[in-house]
Image (cartoon, rainbow, N blue to C red; front, side):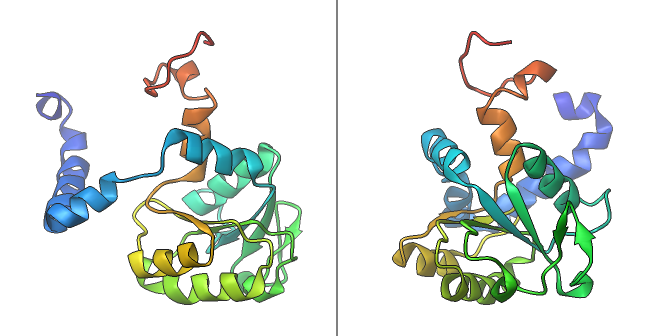
Amino acid sequence: MLLSLVPHLRPAFCRAFFHLAKAGPEGFHARMNKPSDSTLRQILTSTRCIAVVGVSLNPVRPSYFVARYLKLKGFRIIPINPGHAGEELLGETVRAGLADCPPEVDMVDIFRRSDHVPPIVAEALDMLPNLRTIWLQIGVRHDEAAATAQARGVAVVQDLCPKMEYQRLFGELRMGGINTGIISSRL
């Protein structure tokens, strides 16, 4: 088995498998039930302005490089971090909360623990008139908050990364020799 050949992968694989197994059959299926590729592609092509909640100013943190990548792909990034409000990040002023965001924000990307999601979703629904998508990062799920947003007509993506999905869906991972599951004649 591959894990015996690559011992440094064993702990991460075991943690991921344990996490899914601990959730039981319903939790396993909920985690495996992700939006279709066409839905994700539609979200990523129609989005223009993303508020990144929980973004770090530290360039080695995942929230920073996801925000930076999305900025490089042409999205306007509105950084949200109350601990750094007023500072500059990626050409924008860091905001303390979603209430401080411009109205053109149409997606909220959440880099916070799952138990912090409901008040963030509630604030987004109340304060952002053009909101179309709430995206919860890898490892972040909250089905009740997702249902609340969906009841208001807002799309919800849970437990996925927009950077990784963008790369997978638009061919950037294929260049590195990674099988993305998408058939294309492009290299």
